[in-house]
Length: 227
Image 1 (cartoon, rainbow, N blue to C red):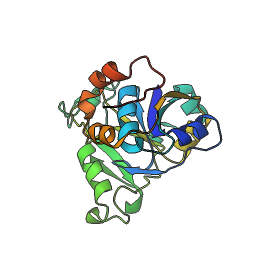
Image 2 (cartoon, rainbow, N blue to C red):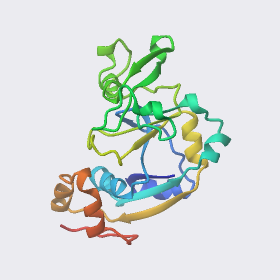
Image 3 (cartoon, one colour):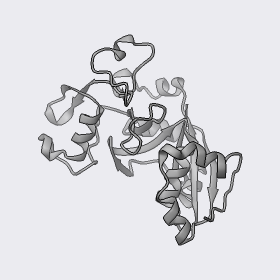
């Protein structure tokens, strides 16, 4: 599995070069942690441009290679991994609660703030808890819950909810150790965007990511984007 993440070029160089450790610096739909796109470089490029397109040193996308063996070596077992995507090897995932529109399924989620109680929920319910913890009886700010029982959480994104091929993965706790021990590479980068280009890039949709990638980025390691 290859994970892709958009960053500033400065941080990308530091992480790939080993000068900076990956940490839980992001807050998002799955709470606090470090977020990546699974096997989807076009999504990584759009994220890099939209979040870091005007970083002083430019934008970049890194890849991190994670294998099942590496997961096992870090001591991360099944209970510490949660995916709202169905498992092709587990037919029950396609039974009650399976949503063909978003390719998500109901999960038993362990909620630490409820005394480690297990609550049945689908992805939308999980995302709503993260967006409004206090409204669901939890302590915490929007998108900052750690979900400490889970080293790895995977699922769709509200930015492109019906695309069953687009999966984001969040790492926390032991999952961060997994990332820091894994092989990393700088995949693509470019200088900071001018104001006009940046505004146009901000309107790009993840739904169009493959076409955009083929038109402007495929096969290139450096792109000076000007629109």
